[in-house]
Length: 145
Image 1 (cartoon, helix red, strand yellow):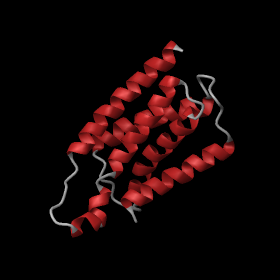
Image 2 (cartoon, rainbow, N blue to C red):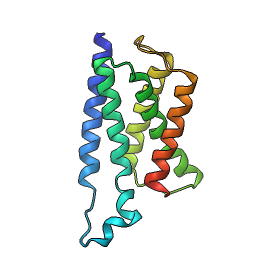
Image 3 (cartoon, one colour):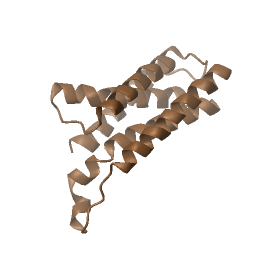
Image 4 (cartoon, rainbow, N blue to C red):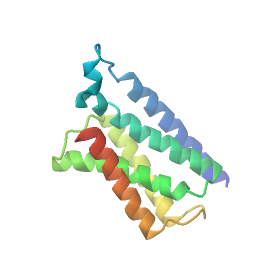
C-alpha cells in the first residue's frame, strides 16, 4: 500500500506540474467567433491528457475500483498522441518535454493496469478495448475533428 501511494503521489505531482504548464500556454482569443474555431479547442488536447493523469493518479492513491481502467485510459491516450503524430494523421501540439514525460508515465500506468500490480479490480479485455477506443476519441476530438 505504501508503494501504491508513493507512485500515485509522484504521478499526481507530475500531472499537476504538466497541467499548470499546459494551461499557461492556452491563448484565449478576442472576439466571440474565435471560440468556435478548431484552433481554439486544439489547445486543450495536452491539458486533457494531463487531467486524465491527475484522475488516474488520484484513483490510484485512494485505491478506487476503477483505477486500472483510468490508468489504461490515460496510458493509451498519452501514447496515441505521438503515434498519430508519427504516422502523419495530425500534427500534435504537445511539446516535446510533455511527450517524453507523458509517454514514460503512460508506459508505467499501462504496466500497472494490465499486470494489476496493486491487486485492485482487474482490467478485463473489454475494459482494455474500451480504454483504447476512448483514447482514440479523445485524440481525434482535440487534434483532428
